[in-house]
Amino acid sequence: MNNKDFVDAIVRSAQRYPDATFSEKGRIHTCVNPYSYHLVRNNSDLYNDMDGLFVDGILMVKFIGWFWGHKIPRLSFDMTGMAPDLFNRLNQNDETIFFVGARQEEIEETVKQIRSNYPGMNIIGFRNGYFQTEEERHDTIQQILQTNPDFTIIGMGMALQENFALDLKKAGYQGIAFTCGGFLHQTSKGINYYPEWINKYNLRAFYRLYKERGLFKRLYYILLEFPILFTLDSLKTKLSKK
Image (cartoon, rainbow, N blue to C red; front, top):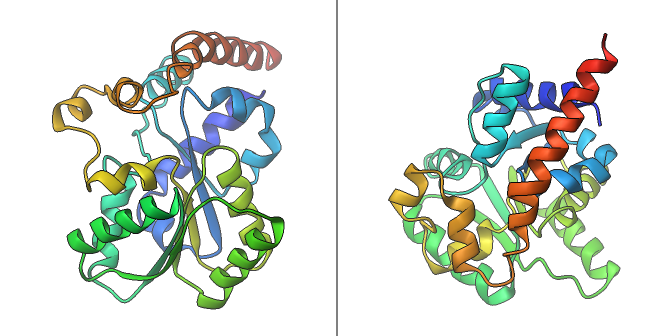
């Protein structure tokens, strides 16, 4: 993996946030983190097709600084990152938004939470992120095209959400789409998933491991595989330039 191109894409995205990110139509954005790094390496063409690439994970922020000398912000699509910036914008104008993700009962509760905290936001549609058939997935893309929201938020887990965003763009979507990982199911319990002290000390990954069952395998990818792979990829890229 060419880490210079990967990091350059992240740096460009960070430099364009928030003004260009929220205004340039027909673009799709996603976030990467230490856990998903192995998926990015195995699906590099998919992530190269993203218009915006942001870092969700303080460990990756640190490694990019150490190896490549770039100081970038952590920007995930949740209430500790991009979501408040976008939601405050939509709460004060007539732009529209559509949500796809989580289970049906979760997305319904999440929309209630968001509407309660941002009563001026125009949510023109939402549905769960579980498709029983390819036809149902296709119909959802067509529904989004027909309602034509200014923004679409997609939370299905990697790399399902990136593929959906890319297919949405290929189908002719003219709005702006963001993938959001677990944000939509997390918000079903309350608008702020992370306690303030957890966010302050950058312990979000460990808090998720504590709160959500079945995530302990992520420790291997976060604490062991990511540092090794990113280091090797960075060194390989640097040595190939000499």
